[in-house]
Length: 231
Image 1 (cartoon, rainbow, N blue to C red):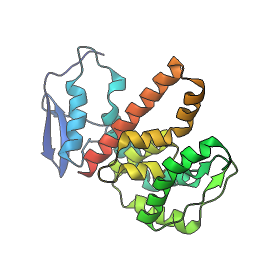
Image 2: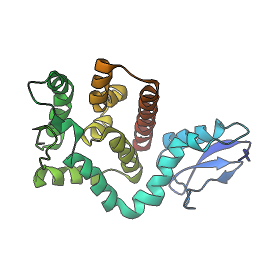
Image 3: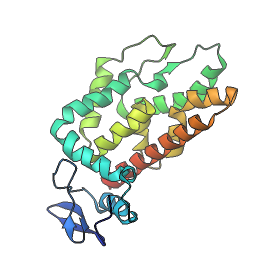
């Protein structure tokens, strides 16, 4: 599709911020008004439109897609999306570790344990750890506290969290991303620890490296949107 606009601008209206193409406000893919919570979030979306060349590249609209997802999908079903996020806590990658006599276990303890402990302290919960792949359920009290924490977030942050959690296979990691001063790349590396460990042992192939780079970039973009949306 050819680019059909010349100017991109951001304007405050109706209690939020909108991106305008040649003075016309854009809509979500579901045809709703795309009203963003902060100027910073609107500017992220605007930058994607401004960066387009003569031919539109649909895959480059990462922030617009998160915003649309927040409005079209999360807003009408917040309960369902909070439940989806909680499912990552129930099987959180950072809680499932190698056996203590395996070399990988030490790396997991060094990298994962501080993150899990920090999450527990921040939210007043206790998370079950396990060695191996046999499921160990989290307590109803911990899941209830995490549900309450998630319900405090706005639609746009929840949308970003869904992306982060799906990449990390974790809820501990996305919640850490929201903390002030979070090292986003280090948190991605923590979530990707087991794959990186295998690559250290056996080497990377080009496809695996490209896939890792793509996941990291998607993780960074979602983190950037969450930060902007929360102001």
